[in-house]
Image (cartoon, rainbow, N blue to C red):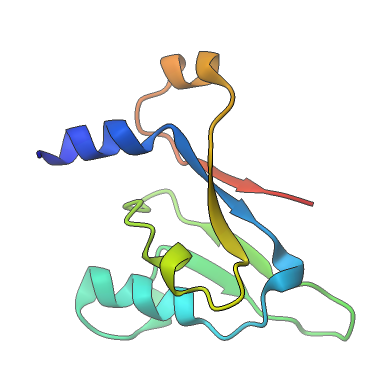
Length: 106
């Protein structure tokens, strides 16, 4: 299967992020960077985790525009802070081809 077909199949999925579940272990960032560079370097990852700086805060989780949608972050998140769900907005899907599909849930 060629890369464009894989992307086409995946664009009906989106990330569902629950920051309250994130413990800041960076497993998702490390796996992402390993897929991209062959080394564990969070600065090279396409997912960014901004750690908690004050008690009671939640970490900030977002994806860079050049995310490959390999979903390795979903597989390696130990607490399920990043999951996948099907996109519900079919009209939006018909308008865009390869736009980022990250979604933050409250």
